[in-house]
Image (tube, rainbow, N blue to C red):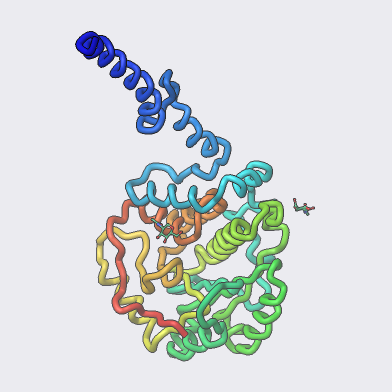
Length: 324
Ligand SMILES: *[C@@H]1O[C@H](CO)[C@@H](O)[C@H](O)[C@H]1NC(C)=O
Ligand SMILES: *[C@@H]1O[C@H](CO)[C@@H](O)[C@H](O)[C@H]1NC(C)=O
């Protein structure tokens, strides 16, 4: 009896074990169901298809892949549903033909091109010390006034959506009357009609990101061809003595080397310098408006470098600008 069982029972037990374990193995390890139709994979991919948040900026390398995954993680599927409902277009305004006289709230536009335009978005920001007046003072006091008048334009951006900021920008800028009169200091404002319905985006994380991207696109569009170079700054930073000369020297130092951006501050979008007037800033504006929902300003700046195959960060060390 025993011997018989050894020859019949063992194969039966083995067969039963294999039959039971195979579907479990396929399901758990391979991610397919018993018939190999890939249930788990379909589940993973389904939300991506509806969202449109995985839409990524065209050809790029590894870094781009990382940011794509990151932005997908940040936007949960529930947030994403509201994206579909509201296709985003910058409402009613062609940024490449921005009406600059209408955007200008205080100051005068320059007749001729200067050397450097410095753009500062004056919009709510989180963390750290911030003081637009101190930033402006450092920019103005650390350059001889003749040089400032002939070479530098400072553009303060405000948004009609930030009511409080708009008022304090008026007060701060008008406390530099000579520079406002002398075309050095300009205050601009994006009208309400520039923005899509941000509350329709459903959550503040997403609407904050979209607004920040669009704010900066507007500022770039206004300032893009007013000088030979454009420098992005933020109102938590201060400029050192002779910053203008340092910037000029660093540009000269690059010689014929290829670059699309030079970095005078290592973090985020502040302290980044671009060539004015050409396709670079135009492409940046395109990225900020086209992918305003999908990625943060900082990520889009990285995409910009990747798209233009700038292999290494060209960073001035130590950072030219310091925290207030
Ligand atoms: C992804 O996001 C996390 C925070 O959500 C951040 O710490 C990390 O640096 C990001 N990675 C990339 C590649 O951007
Ligand atoms: C914006 O979207 C919100 C939420 O969907 C809606 O209640 C509101 O009426 C919209 N506003 C405009 C001006 O369309």
